[in-house]
Image 1 (cartoon, rainbow, N blue to C red):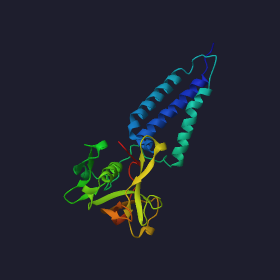
Image 2: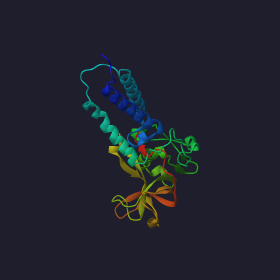
Image 3: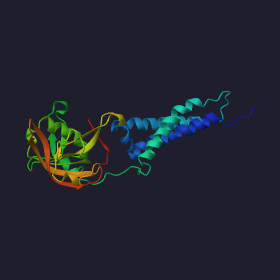
Length: 256
């Protein structure tokens, strides 16, 4: 009997190769960061390699003679791939360069790595943060350490009062948690995946707040202080300067 190409093997192999490309593309372009945390990087490479091997195997078996050819199970791959490509297109990620380089920024400056602070907050005790200059009483909050610095400072602000804080984030002016005349340079915290994100950031007091536009990426410099309210004190950065800046290399921050 003459062997013909097994169409189910062909389609399955093509879909698996497409899945392998998708996982590897997410990894090398770092676009995976829009969906999951960096801890999943090894799994992305593993999944890409596995789908690649499966695709090659199905092409090797193209002329296998079978009496039943099944296609319905391929929906388990087609549907998530279609949703992924739709999301990538919607977020305009298709033009992302392979192996993107880190842009120059005051908030990922290698010089900050020499300015070390050891965290005291129990859950992170002993962890090193960077951008801490005790002599000049300044803290440059590096892009990847926003959450940890927020935890450390808000857990016990006393040692840092009077320090000049330099941080960055997206402007948020409308929030029930912000006092009048305040805004926050916010980052999005991801603990597991894109479904569990929430917004974090310092409270910043700034007089010409009407000049700010929600969603803009800005760098903020000011002095950390406790401000007297009617019934309590509130920790704020008393802002000296607000300047527009580039978005960070990683869209989110993480709790680990």
